[in-house]
Image (tube, rainbow, N blue to C red; front, side, top):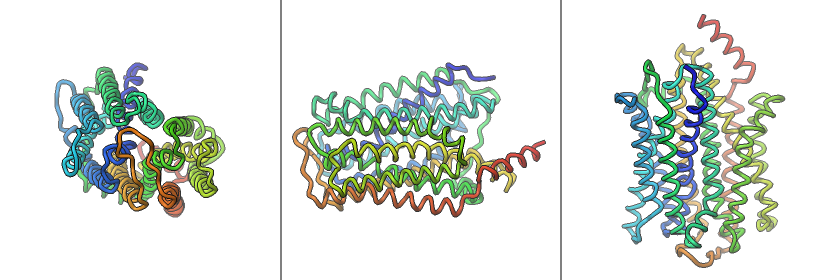
Length: 458
């Protein structure tokens, strides 16, 4: 039975809510606990890395629990709702840190952030895993995946665009109060969105769900050299993105500066978020009319790399105070990331067909689960590198809740500029060199594989 428009919309609303929560945590925890609470960036980065690696390892075990769940509400909805409520409570606690000092606040942050990751996994794994269980229609399955990814991008973009502006307004200039109030609002919206999703989506009575052990996941990935190439490219691309997203707020606060730096930052992230969505929904389809997917991949990597080069040149020319100039590389970087997010999903899907032809087994769910596993671990390492980098360049954050922005030394500003341009650019160069040497699933090969599979299934 085909899904209704209402059900598809409810699934998209769920994606918006959950990625608003994820974006708030992934993009602003470092800033909140370093600049506002006063912890060292290296310590915050270390805890983020430990939590995300633990979260990555926890994913397959959560998948097993979901698969073995049997209730009158199905397998997915009990976890989706309970995980959402718990995660919303933990999110509020994460950005409403108590007035503790020294080891006490370090212990609080360590425990609460690991709990945040665990409770988010409780609802995230069931959300994506239920797609094949709620419809058997191929077109609906594809549409739900596209709706989910697109709406997740919208939810993430909304938080990245509006957070600092809302924090300033909600806190009356006090960022600590502002973050607490914003987290409460996001948590409530999160719960409402997932309740709407759970109330509208019902799994098929004849649905089944297979699971794989961690060992099976790794074997399926390493036996499929094309899936491995795509996953490693995703890791490199996402690492560049995570480093940028965690450092750009420091660039606007301490490099561009000014009393209204949050307004400039909000405008930049708003334009960037819009460009990322346009990259996915408009630019990629337009390029696809003329170019192959592998050619578009090279164009996107080139555009992002050019953006970082332009940004570095602007900084070296001491023109970093010009928002108009900074927006130029921002448009290139964000639009390219939108295109790359679509392409890597397409490439990974194509590698599933390749793997079936090679081994006779279709490991779709295993390979996509492995992507999540590896990317979470890589994102943790990237955030740790960014945190250590901030301490190495001697950046002194504002530990006061109000007052003027702390002035940084010229050496610190120069180091910050290098961190947010050279490191991401190097990762993108490695990605394109590696991908060009290993990836062989061109449009022609994909078409041939599809024909071979069609014949083998007759």
